[in-house]
Image (cartoon, rainbow, N blue to C red):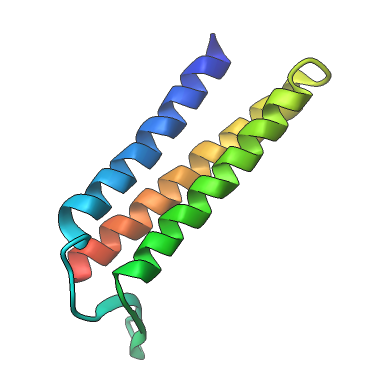
Length: 105
């Protein structure tokens, strides 16, 4: 039951990130601020495809970790929980990154 809850939380975080991207950034045709610093200002400019790449890479990493967790589920439950918790943490970071890109632009 705990594994299913962790997977659902992970999927919800990724889905929120994808929905935010398509609602706010899919129509963006100009240059986006991808990374900035308080001292140096804007460090990296990009397009909506760079933000899409962040979401895509994060989703692929989550799929790989989920597959590894499924493989290790019968052998080692602790490793399964570690991999799935890392997925939730990565999904949360991706959601924060997408939210920051949206708020800056």
